Image (tube, rainbow, N blue to C red; front, side, top):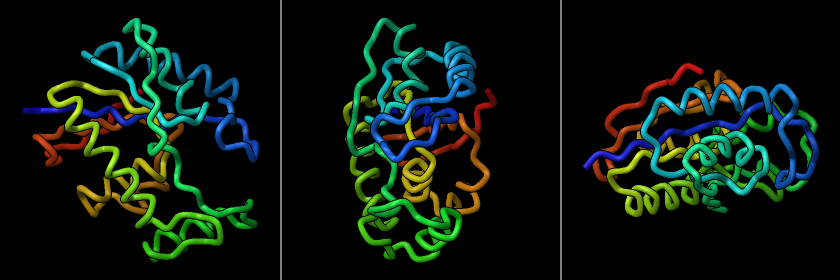
Length: 184
């Protein structure tokens, strides 16, 4: 039985150190209309999201069109890079991608974040088997989940993502069959 996941990387947000409540920017809010209009063309059954405000805001228009609420899954939250703000984000990100077991103080390694994300993905694939699911998420955790199924999705892929971005993943049971970039 085929299950389709539409990973939606959140739109542009306003930077604040409060990861949970960081909102979308004005540009991000405009982009959510494009996401909603694009996904209107698909037969979506439900909408799931990270608990972070920017991810929820990016997909809540889709849920409203379905007359549903966004289902929150805590383990779809973004990977925590470090316990405090890092001086050089690019260097800190490249380091964790080059050594999957490395973590900055107070942060998650790729291994830990990937295990968390994949466990949730497996639960979603079982619970919503045969359905079309939109998942509001973040760049790192999305790519780490995709990487579990196909190692070609890694640091270089993550670096080229847009805000927002949509990837359609087709599964047969728990086996990834295809990945397609959906233009917005």
